Image 1 (spheres, rainbow, N blue to C red):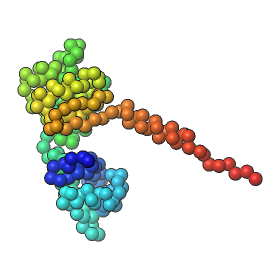
Image 2: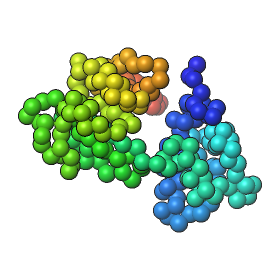
Image 3: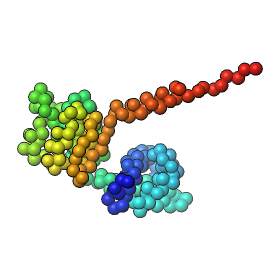
Image 4: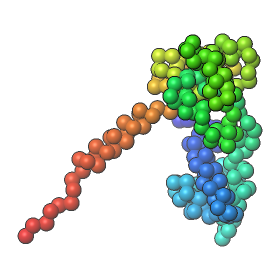
Length: 220
């Protein structure tokens, strides 16, 4: 069983909160000021009963006949997710994926600021990428740059060493894109994003769909 998140919010609920916030942000951009649980659930891709249960953990309950106040609920979810402050991020591994993430403008819009780019390749170190000078982990340590979240985009055989060094630097939250399972202390949170695995899962569903029998031909 997953350990509950802070203040008793289950991890599964925490995993759905960003979808609710994304849907609410889209509603606010369209000028919507209130939304029903059914409408918000549909926009987030969950059942309305699940949404109401999730939001009840935050102490948020819609008003019958009115629904949820979009601005208030957005603020509440953002606060629960820790998005009311800016989080400094370091990206380790400046290959194609690392560079794409460094260029992604959505981080800053959501409260994450990339403060450092790291690579160990001498051909890359010292170059300027997205306004930041690429440095080594040793240089990052010597600079004393405060970092809250580490993003690993290195090859699999380098990921564990990078994770160890990030932990030694005081990083306690890691987003791992490398196809490797990381071993970290209990107080370090790791989220794994394996694009190849996700594609393999989609391939499974495509294969099942292709193998499914088609409509029976009617003869007579």
